[in-house]
Length: 312
Image (tube, rainbow, N blue to C red; front, side, top):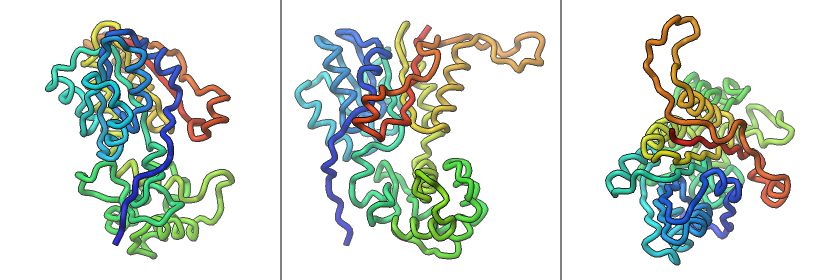
């Protein structure tokens, strides 16, 4: 029988100072943390927004919300926490009369709490079922994908979401070795398929990333959430996104670029026919990186990239 225990890892929010500056947090402002997690960023935002500031925090993971409730308890009714998927951010906020808002934050990817929590299946460094769901309400697990997808579908998934160069070799070995039920079984299968071909990364890193993204539909949800967030912002409101890999970053960068231009017609169209109007202006010209001192203290943040835009 599998037992799930709460992680003892302390939650270290990344780039807190840069987040507060990018959001331009002001006293009395209303803010949305779409990935509230352990509540680290939310706590800093509420402190900077006092007196009178309000924050609505969203997370699909009920265990993360428990941690956030404890951390933000001292703010009382100023912190409203909601279990849900951030793709529904507009509906969640509108149904609670929490719009328009002064700022919205996304801190994408996997948290240290989720990575360290036993039984979730996010890490190949501990034995656990191949789950990888952010929310227990989701139906599809990583085990479902690993054990039912065709070899071609697995290879395509590993290439698309993990940018795995050896996707075909890994998919072939997975099909040969399955059923695979645990994280360590999958990690061993990947190692047998590719050996130690990466100098810095464990050979299963990209496979686990790809499966997690697919299970949670992370990229599709992000694209929908950015659209909804734009429409929640009041004039001058800020949208801030921290991404950790190139697939997320590309979606954010392309959305900001598109929404900061009037015409988005193809270059070969002589006259604008799209009638698109810019809704955002860039608040960061290039991605902001964590300071070297923060990377030294928290190596997991080394790949973090922050981008921000302001509502027109």
